[in-house]
Length: 149
Image 1: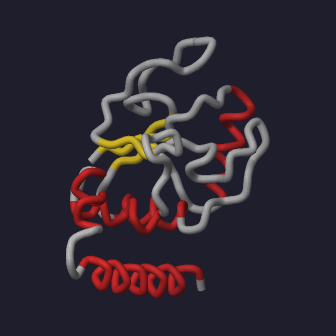
Image 2: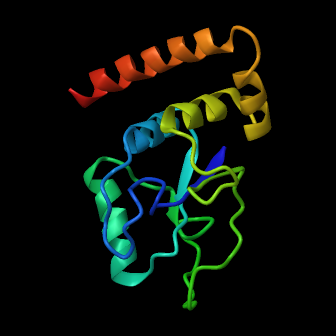
């Protein structure tokens, strides 16, 4: 899938125009999605030096995007007062979603299972799901703690 990812409030805490602290598991989850062949596009309101800071923040942590504020890395950049073009993405991960930003374990589960938010939240309340979610959370905690080392 092509996944558009916001920066402020999604990858880092919302402190715009400053860089907030990384949201737990954001970078690790995005890198895992890339390993699974998903293309990530950084889609943010940041421009110029502020955009460069966001790209460098991710790059310093080993996260490189397929494209930044564009559908394709070779797409001609134009000067806008704010990025407002519509991206051709299969999925958008943004803290401004209806219902807010799920935690990154939930995001990974939705993407991996190709669930819509409706599918995910309806499965969340079905019988036996809380045990499955506990096992998934334990797996993700274990997996990501090994990667950090």
